[in-house]
Image 1: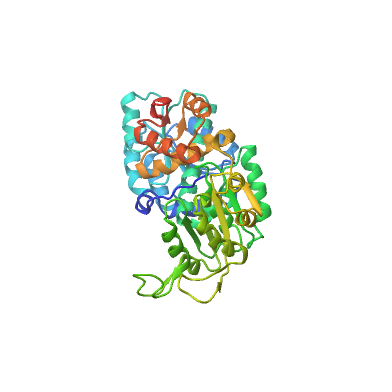
Image 2 (image 1 turned 60 degrees about the vertical axis):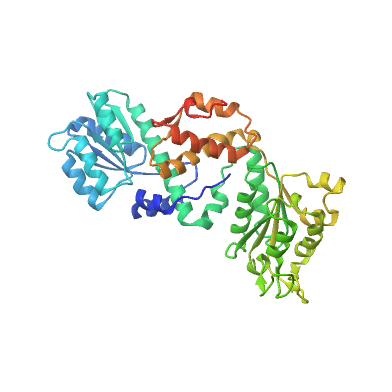
Length: 423
């Protein structure tokens, strides 16, 4: 999968220390289990309040109950909860007034408004003030339980994205890989065997957009080289001359315009990982110069006279079938066999259907933070549409699709109408 980077300013506005600390505790729990949450219940009717307390306690959550908005606001100052179930109609401060006050006191807590006789106007006003949901008390407790679970899952995903941004290396930890499909579970199994082999070259083969670079970073950060640099060079965007200069560096006078020594990427990657992106696009003349890098980690700067031995691992990726490229004379056989020590085939998204919706929800959380939207559900019809699509652009296409859908969405549920017109 691809884990997106987030704008720091968006995170700073949307979250506080409480959310980060809670997520650090959450890391100790299993990835797909709902967390134990801190939930406050506010209702002036004792019978309903007690019923909610019992329900939430049975769900293994930490519960505190209050009979007025004033009591809640005093408690939130000292102990911001994960979720608040808030009665709309109460003596003193009503639910809308409390919701307005909560916007100043805590931005991390999700609020579900409850009412016995709510109106459409009340619901609209509540959503404008940032309420997560609006429920009528006449519904079954099972329906309330489903909303609570949905809210908690949203909190979990939101904190995961925040934590991944603040702890860049952790975002490439294997535990964060979305791998519900058999195809990705097989990849994870291969990765687990590779973690201790920090010097062995790795070849990642797969279609464009499948997440080869992301997996390269997972391999890097999960190995003993994780504290070293991850340095990338692209074979698709650079001319052979630029590739050579950027990778190897050069000495003063190596060519016209080389007025001083310039260190290359190989000088910068010491103790880390060199990622050669789309090596199948590399010019044949340059392929010969890469052989020594892969074989014994040695190189020579342009214009230099001494061989330099480095300490790094080489990971290469290719959307091309390199074995076929060798047969066609477009790729060096000696380079192929040196790279192909540990080959990985990264599956296309159409072969990992079980991962589509978890990935979509992760991207929904990311863009929800960036756009300031609380879109938390996917309409069953939209789920069916996504499952029926072949995704020729793979995970990258899904990410772009969800970003666009989040921009268009006006409710809390992603609908088929939010998806691109091609659907």
